[in-house]
Length: 150
Image (tube, rainbow, N blue to C red; front, top):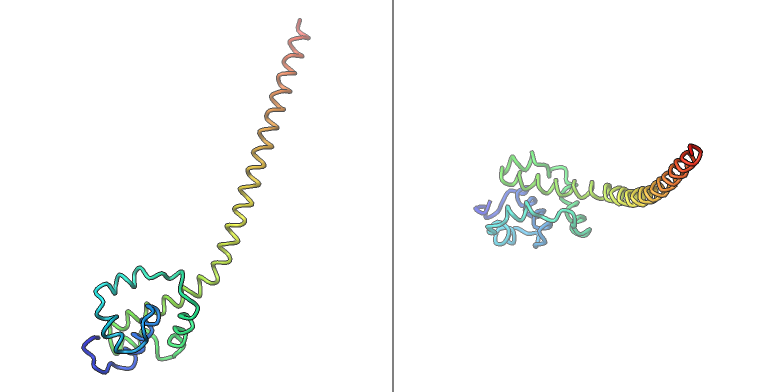
């Protein structure tokens, strides 16, 4: 992709979207000089903090994702390498949308688990107190039996 002086439009669009996610300027010069020359690009993509994508970045990315021609298949017709990057940008977009839906549910589960733990703790205390009373009753019944047997 670096070899392109003027890349095909979908390759350029893909690298602009990647640059948006990586916090770089979304243009071909930056993509060529910074993004594509980064020897750790693959590692950056693999370890990208997908759980904390700023809303501003997601809005910028949405402009690319919304374009009907911006699909991995059509990008793949122009460049196989760009197809993989396009798939990654789509994956980040999808993940962020799912995460937004799931996060409140995760928090609700955590809250309910805290309540369950508290209820189980209270139940354990009551069961321990009940066992103490049962043991005392058993001791008194034994004492009564022993007294009656004399």
